Length: 345
Image (cartoon, rainbow, N blue to C red; front, side):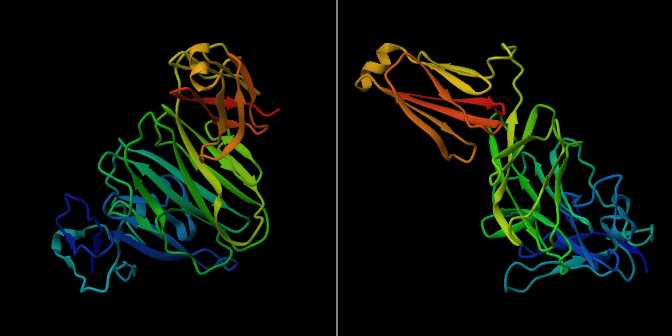
């Protein structure tokens, strides 16, 4: 007759799961006659759900009523193998609040970096979560929640992947100063424009994010513009169109005409709005028959421009699409890479 708290974290006492049982629960709510049922995901290990605090999803489901299973509320839990699975529940999981449909079980951790990604069409929105913590690692683990796709073709699904697993909630290691690129997958089964957006309320200001649309060669700084509207080119699952690039914000004071200056072994890479200037000492040039290899690479590692130069100072054109790129220089035994920011020409 009472509500049950779905708390499976490290300090949980009321619920224990065998190793082959996911820590995630899924449940459906009604999203209106045009959409039908809509899936909501909650990770009991981390206390994170696909619902954003302060927002209301279909069925008046809010973050305040996520995490506890009320009387007569059905949920799904995934068993990850064919072995026997157990879920042990005792009275310590009971709570006094019987409010419907669910009551919050969030752990309320404030130290994580969390990116909430939304995809919305004319009917409804879907959400995915990526969060970074020093207790998480790459690959499928308890902090991850696999995606349980909606039956309705009107729902514009968004998710990430690790290996062959599709994830609604993706726990990753703590961010460092190194750039990180995360492919975003989408599933659109209805025609019409779609809006991709992010919520960065729980994301560290020390990092900036770019959304790359590989089909239109468009980069969007999500710190400046939180939404990107696109039209699906094909219906169904698409894994190679969108990439989320996370960069450490530089605090160095530089000439605004020189965005990103890098020097090593005497090689200097200076980024300008439409080109990069590369300076190479003659001593390095002579180590490789008087030539150096200069490449412009996107954040997925694809070479966009490649030239050889026998000059100590060379200007190489950047792509015509705004975004962050890497200029890679090989001269003799020295190899140098530096990030530059291109402004749309």
